[in-house]
Length: 294
Image (spheres, rainbow, N blue to C red):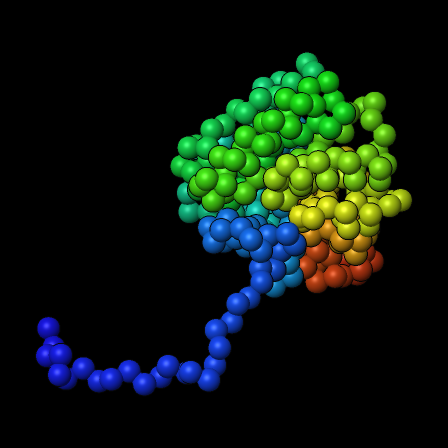
């Protein structure tokens, strides 16, 4: 141990330079704790403030969806091009290698299949499991207007409470039943309720009339749900419009893994989300990459 007399006096205090107090880049997230922000910064790219989420959790209620029959073959090659993957613990443990370093959004609600009333969900994965699996967020389905609306909302608030205790954000996924109107008024209602009750960010559907009112009236980030399979240009156009109208990213599944060229499609989506590329330019990129891979 050196003699105390030989220690040089520190001089670089920079007394003329005040400390910077930077606000967090995500909407409505500045007051969150460090661990929560750090996890969100692994989901959302800090440079663009946006995310490309790859949703592959469909099997938790509808079995082996087309394109998800073999996650090891069809999905793992796409993973490097996503900012985060949304999936179930079963697929994570059995298929995704532990060397995978992209962020994970873990599906934690469930309990019914397409053969039953989907809104009758419960919490299916505990907070300890989310911690063990190093999840960056927990996804809970919320059925505003559904038969079990109250139960699904309470599911979400329970996960918000438990996640906040351990620094893990909660993603509220707004589910739309067959009999519900997919209009701006409904989505303003659904997203605002989730935000008011503590969701850290929200996944919801795009609508052509009034989507900007949905994003502007929601105090936390909104990520656009991809929904059913569309032609590639149409899907890119939907993503572009959602981003330009206030979405903080997209969570696409079928529009990527059911594409003719999924690797090309996820890169084209990334260009729209992170680089503000127009749908036409992104579609050109898609075709170039598709032809290169064939």
